[in-house]
Image 1 (tube, rainbow, N blue to C red):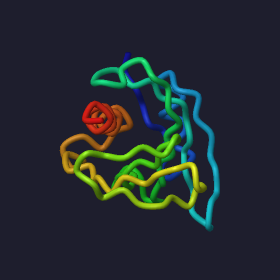
Image 2: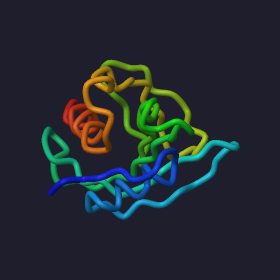
Image 3: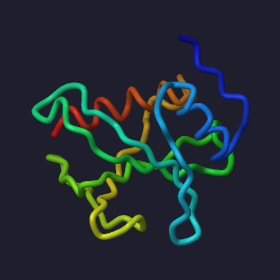
Length: 121
């Protein structure tokens, strides 16, 4: 399936997530816009578990990627850099930039990044 991203910013990101088969919605927390969706961990020790993912969407997406993911339940990452999330106390923010973003500025590219991150827990 080819995923097209017709818009920019949060609306475009949410539309692209929906086109990829995820049921995403926008959420505002502390004046910041997030795309929130359920995600099933595909590989690793938690494979098959469903978590909620929140991604802060920059206004210039797809030029800039979402920041690292916000996860619920609050999960630790073996390499640290886990912080409180503005989405609430039962969420955790993983400071994990999408380093490959310049090569693939798509939702599909970010979901590959997310898959790699959650496979490490």
